[in-house]
Image (cartoon, rainbow, N blue to C red; front, side, top):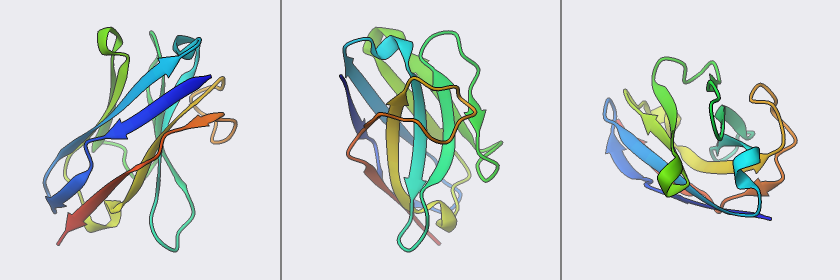
Length: 122
C-alpha cells in the first residue's frame, strides 16, 4: 500500500506562485509514478503532470506547460508541484496519486491523496 498526503494549498493572487507537496509512504512507493491531477467544480478531473519517483523526466499537461514544475526530494519522500504565473482557471482541488504506470498515462493510478484546495483570485 502507498499512502499520500497533499499539503500547501491556499489562496493566492493571480500571477502569484504556490508550491504543493505530496508526502509518500508505504510499501514500494519508490517503484511508482507520482501524478498530479486537479478537479474544479463542474469539470472533469484533469491531468496536471507526472514523474517517476527516481530518475524520471516529468511530463505535463498542455494547460500547465511552462508554468508548473514537478520535482522530488528523496530524503523527505516528497514530490512537489511548483506553480507560477497562476491564473483563476487554475483554481481546483489538487490531488497526487501513485501508480505503476508510465508518466504519459492518464489512468491506472491506484492510490490517491485527500486533495488540497488551490484558489486563485483575480
